[in-house]
Amino acid sequence: MLLKKIPAICALAFGLAVAPGGASAASNPQVLIKTSEGEIVVELYPDKAPKSVANFLQYVDDDHYAGTVFHRVISGFMIQGGGFGQDFYEGNLQTRKTRAPIEIESKNGLKNDRGAIAMARTGDPNSATAQFYINVVDNASLNYPGHDGYGYTVFGKVVEGMDVVDRIRHVPTGSMGPFQDVPRTPVLIESVRRVGN
Image 1: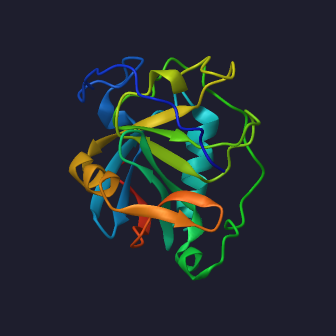
Image 2: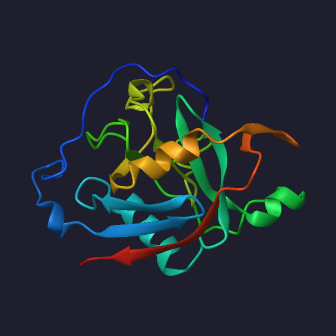
């Protein structure tokens, strides 16, 4: 499940106190992504992307992400993970077992700005399963309607740990099998768990 590389377009800042749609940040679920490069806290927006948030949290609760890697890192674009285990580096290029794909929710008004987390998918707009990406720059061309008439579903944003995201975005990358932009040294997702409420 790969995203087509598209150049970044604009540079806007995030406000952290109030979530999109006016909900208090404290009322939204948060998850802690513990990586080999440090910890990232992500706030999720179930009011804007209910199917995507429920899907992501089910994978979190099932411990799906423990032991996966960020398998695609493009320093001027995004970091993508959640689909391959660490054995990816031993030649096992099969994605981890996933549930049925979910319906796209890209018309929710959330933007692929720096720090936003979104669902990765194939060319089929309704193909997102477990893989996600974090935008490291503002990627306006991934917003609805995008280059393909659908865009990509944003369902949350990083509220702590963008320094960790930035460390990951700058790791050396290369090719592995059919994949490009693969970190030469694995960037491991050690665990993802709910925090706060």
